[in-house]
Length: 195
Length: 159
Image 1 (spheres, each protein chain N blue to C red):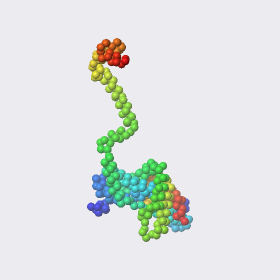
Image 2 (tube, each protein chain N blue to C red):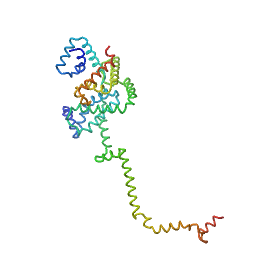
Image 3 (cartoon, each protein chain N blue to C red):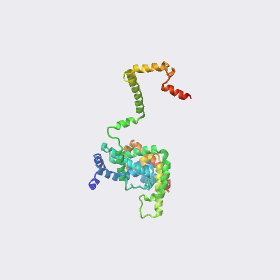
Image 4 (cartoon, chains in turn purple, brown):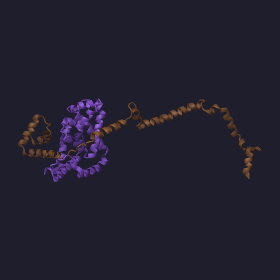
């Protein structure tokens, strides 16, 4: 049964979820959980918050399942939910964010080896990779929210300008402009990598 | 194509978002212009560097926790058909309006009842009027009749 549903499109799985098919929902969650989780993680820069928000995204997917209309790609739809949730969350916790990020940075420095790592890498290589990951994370967090979102959707999720425009509810030219500025800003932040 | 025109389009070129003709024109300019080529190489280097941001993996119990949360929320959910009621009472203006309406209705009903003959004191109005006359006629201050229980009590108290 699971194998049969594995080849089904996410849009069809969503329709089945709306009909109360829990197995379809499970496959949908397992298919998209990593991308949703990492989109949030890159956007908010906090693992714990990312895990909580990723669950919240799928709760909303479940709740909206019976109202789902196949107007857009499922990925565009779920990223729209995710983006809105992230923006609202950041607005509501702006004051607390700095403290959480500091705690997160400590956690990352201590336990970041849980992240995907190549077993063949030496401890020095791993440490260097961690350092670079942290620098990229910090550079991303310095970008304005809309530039950061556009850059993450393009760089890590490889979405087209059209899809990003739908998710961010703006025009194609606005997406292009956001990405030009985001790339310029991130280049200044990541000056280290140019050397 | 001028360098400034190319540099404006480098980001979209990198993202593969130019139309095929523009993509081709930028590509040929990059082949012939070392300055633009260097600029584009820097952009590519940063784009690659962004890939160093490590992915995190969902915890194995992600789905289990999710189902638990969904079930908890469904259990706490207000029954269908009553949601409007809870939404209504959750707004401050609705609560204030209800309070004011309650006071007005209470006053109105109280006024009607007072005018009607529903209260006990109104039913025994004659008896209550007699009692009132006795109280206000100062009979309470008359001397106590000798030999009564009150007379005996007063005598004991005066010792």
